[in-house]
Image (cartoon, rainbow over the protein chains, first blue to last red):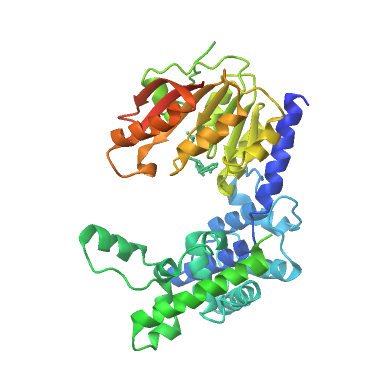
Length: 224
Length: 185
Ligand SMILES: C[S@@+](CC[C@H](N)C(=O)[O-])C[C@H]1O[C@@H](n2cnc3c(N)ncnc32)[C@H](O)[C@@H]1O
């Protein structure tokens, strides 16, 4: 093989193996972040989120101008050999979202769209995380996954870490300013903890169960 | 023979690149025109891109983070001589395949992990005795103890496999980093 062929072989091989690392958690993270943005801002624009999703589907696409992302999505056929492959239902979700954006990538009719998005997110989480999503609210599970950047970064973590995901700032205060150490992170917002008398103990127990569920879901639904 | 090419638009930056920091510290990192380079820990390819312009040979860039490797693949499509290898640097079986028996003239490693020395020793199986080896050592990834003490321990290990040609700390560009030039023995 000459140099050119060697380089081509490596590019193809890398693409093939990278694709195996682009998992369906991307679509969960996409909708989780949209719901998060909607909670934080009055009328956010979704250029950045659309770009992230577009690059999951077409990782090697070269944008001339990211402002055109909206037009790209309108034309998108969602058939990708190099990135994330969505099923029919997921494509419909994404299309629903895009069709409800104006050309500034802002949602046109928020009152109508937001509940639908939350429902779609919930369905996606339940579909790909059937074991862990019965333990905690789907949106919180989505947030846990998105805050560590994906399920692959999550399933190997010990339950003590799971318990504290989302409490990084409190942890930092604990270390740098000798404030009390945080007992819980995102899972604190789960109904189970909110209603519990002993919140520390309950959150520990929930984290223990949750990580087992997440591991099962990872191996059943994501691992190749 | 060139050591680097400097253009106004793409300044080398010793604060982001260990290679450039070592160069600034006066180490001889000469790249010959036909050298093939095996680069472990390529990240998104900032330094790889610059080094690739010094040779007509192939620069094999190994990286194990998918997001970084995507950027590497993008880069390799724009340049002529970068072969991206999405792999763990510890997987010498796969990397052997990816090298297609190309003779490697320079092995460079910039992987700040706890077992960075073991990774280097393992990877040196991929190259011949004449290969020049550049090793960027981040002591903090190995131990929180005094960097000099870590360096001593690392050198003891390295001596069993390599000749140590030169050692230099990378202050002020990178704290608690050393750059070592080695050769097979
Ligand atoms: C300090 S950065 C390298 C920066 C790069 N040399 C430059 O100057 O642009 C280290 C890189 O090594 C990668 N890495 C860490 N462990 C690795 C492994 N076992 N195999 C391959 N790459 C690894 C990380 O993902 C990271 O991108």
